[in-house]
Length: 282
Image (cartoon, rainbow, N blue to C red; front, side, top):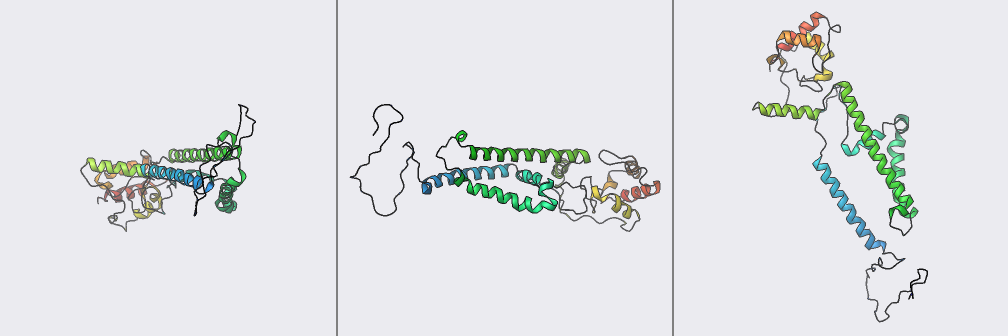
């Protein structure tokens, strides 16, 4: 036992010999109140780590439920204007795989090599950082790796989202889930049911018209092959909203996000497209 108030005196813990060791599995005692000692890794410390991990996992799952991934339109391989984006919690990995040294010729390094190094470092962390100190500023290896990982994930997520917003502005596009929400809101205000993008499209009126070939070549990138809309509005039923002259004027001079086709298409082609679209009243 220590005497006095000197910090360098040896401390000896005195046990009680009258307490006999019981038979069977003995639960290791909690040594946290004794200087220089630590509790057993199994089961004491491991159980605490599992509990913390469960709390973090439940919190993350609650976050993903509160902010679910947006629901876009059904996949359309003919929609060349579509900008693919993963769920928000994978944005950092999506941005990471865009860099040239982990993609293309080095895709194996980016998809298997780098994750193997990261998981390997996580596996070796208990063996590399064997100190008994629990304060993070006295654990330089573990603290540096944690701060570096958090900073990298945050940076890559922000860069990926900024690039996505820049591409939307550059292309003049509105995200699909915003378009869906706006169409649903407009339908509800008109007292109509929500539009169902999975509903089979109505048949074209006069599908053999020569104008259809021009439309398929020029318009499906924004309006989809079935003309139900994608990056641009749906063209089916446009004859109920616009006259033939208004449709021709829109094609010629453009409107909102739609570019002008004056000079790209002849007057005869524009007139034939406008005449055919004005018949699409279903």
